[in-house]
Image (cartoon, rainbow, N blue to C red):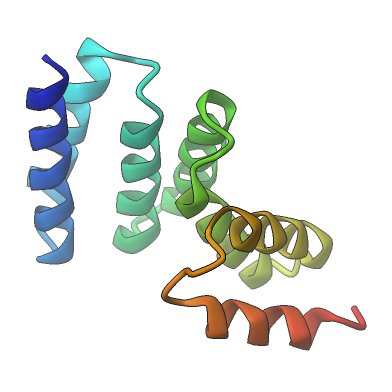
Length: 125
């Protein structure tokens, strides 16, 4: 059961990387219908909305990432994504908090240099 869900999320991730938002959404939805408390599925849904950028998607992305973290605060990805969302909205204190948590959870993150640059730029704000 969990292996099938992992496969659906892996496929959704590949679909998302290829810009196939409908297919990605279908896979994520399958997981959430069976396991509404699947934190990684909520994180994947947030990432889909963040990338798709349709009308209302910024709010949907934020809510999905918050739901993922409510279920599992140790997931680094949603913290990173929320940092970026908040940064773009000018919510500096919230962005800093999310990125600091992200780096604490993923000290070897592949985008660490970028996040540190953002944090350095926000240092005095």
